[in-house]
Length: 274
Image 1 (tube, rainbow, N blue to C red):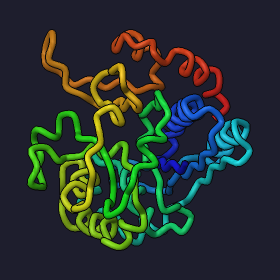
Image 2: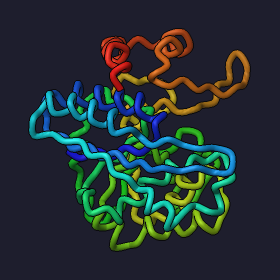
Image 3: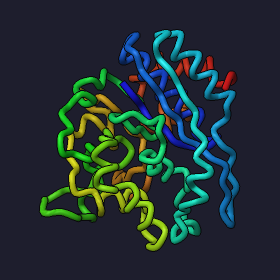
């Protein structure tokens, strides 16, 4: 199975947790991991790339689990410079979110790959989701928990996908030019959540998967992948809530979640080696 992550130096802890959860869920299966990064800066911020040291360390864990597995760190700086998301660079959007949109230009990326945000935990094997028939489908994702109520692009009651977990059919994406068109739209049009919005607007051959493959609100009994997104909470008062897996104390105190204690304890023991 092939997995794709993207990010800068700040993504290293999340990718470590996600990979540890993957190894635990898949138990010795052969996996191939690709991490896209770059050197970048905007008017207000500068970013450090995902380090080679962190990639090498995570690779050592992957190979120790299965010698046939692999991890590759790919520098996309040149791709980004060539096609920057010009209209959205001054927003809260982090440019690293669009790195996955260069996957169609990278010969290393295999035909089928599961993209994951760095704030996910894989709770159960993903093979049933990963191996589904992708004939005529560009990508497969799960409805955005809140965004489905506010955004709409096709002739369905709900069709707005959360882009944090996406199964990508690269030959179909190359044929339709989806990612190329998304990159262009991000250059010329300012958008809210620009990469996710553009993907939803332009993807015509997308499939909606069950919620269990990208649980964005709270852990359910059938959850396969839990995604620690920012969410709205209404009781005892309305607020937004953001708790990430690497903030272990808040996972316990705010979410009252102990499902992943073994995993997070392993992370705490290893994180200083990143």
